Image (cartoon, rainbow, N blue to C red; front, side, top):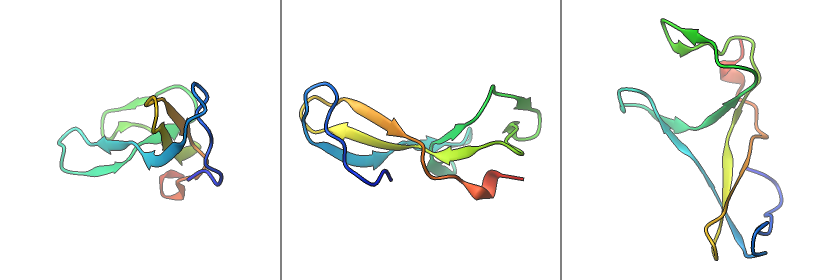
Length: 82
């Protein structure tokens, strides 16, 4: 998660930390949403190729006043780097 809690860019309200939940196509596995560097390259076996790419978890903040969402991708997911 981002180290400092930001103020809302829209109304200067208090932001609450959170994350985006991502589902696989069969909805059996839930994981945190990921940001992947570059253009999407499809794979017949795994859906999208991630090998050798910069892959990061998407953290989010939601404004408690107006609902504005702000996203950060600071933490690298090393288990997706080959």
